[in-house]
Amino acid sequence: MNAIERRVSEGLRAYGEGLSMTTQDVDRLEDRLEDRLEEQLVLREQDPGTRRRANLWQGAVAACAVTGLVLGVLALRDDTDAETQPAGPPPVTLAQLEGIWRVDDSDWLWRFGADGTVTQSHTPNLLTGAETNIASTVRPTPGGFISEKDPSESEGCSEVWAATISTEGRMRARGTVQSAACTGSFDPSEVWEFTRVSPVSLAGAATMPDRASQDPRAVTDPTSLSGTWLLRGTGTLLTVDASARYALQDLGAMTDPETGTVSVRPDGTVAFAPTNAPKCTAVYGSVTYTDTALNTELASGSCNRLATRSDTWIRLN
Image (cartoon, rainbow, N blue to C red; front, side, top):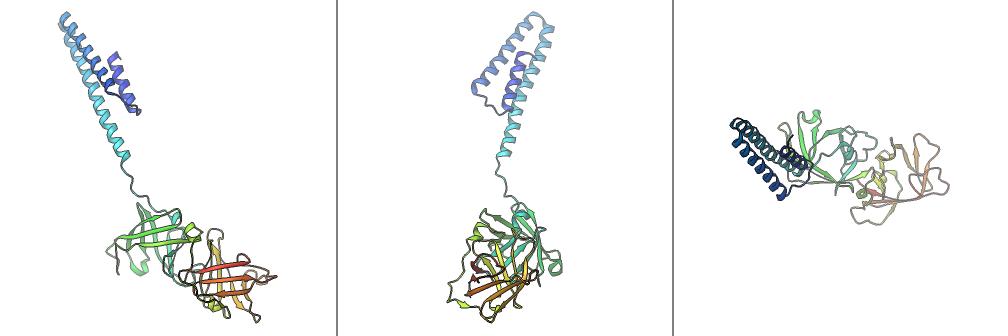
């Protein structure tokens, strides 16, 4: 490799490694090329045969060097442009979705399973899964997720949702495209707002009662506790159904829910008797409720407890 070839090679290598080439660097390359051309003029005067061969050879070298520099700059510029293009929004992963989400300002809760299944309910049955059906199955797609409806309800129906999830545990989602097999109303302009309530999130832990509380009433019948309740500041959920069966679970800490029955004793205390330990009951001496909140005070000597000694639960539905 002669000097000019080596200099051009070094210039290309410097550019390829991301080093800057100044105008002076380019001028020096041009000067060296001109010097080599002048040398070839001298050779041409000395020997016509040598002149022709050297002229062709050096001309080819110079052309290749310049062409290589130009092509290299263009190729690297294209690569740089491609790298600096703004990336599209990432998919919403199943790990991000997993848990129970509250549709803001409503009684509806959506439970996303680790396998992408989605169960929707506005009654206290998501922890046990009693009398629930899988509404759809979701899978990630750039910028959100694709929801495929349960075939028994709408075979072949799928929807593309644009969605983002904040680090605080809030999700904004909007259906953008619906397949021809889908039926029913579809409004691409409607934005859904969700808050993850379990496992705990910052947004879920900050949940407050939706409406102004009324005067608290003492629990005299376990059916007055019917609903889904969130332990304030945590991801622990308590459900009580119309048959006075309860379930207790924090999806971030418990694999399976604790289940049992609720009863009001003659002395006015409220007992939560777990199925797997019926002799160790959580007994509360004071239990009052409003339309939006439940307050409990553990009785002295209680064998068990749902959370702490004094708890506030927020009604979700």
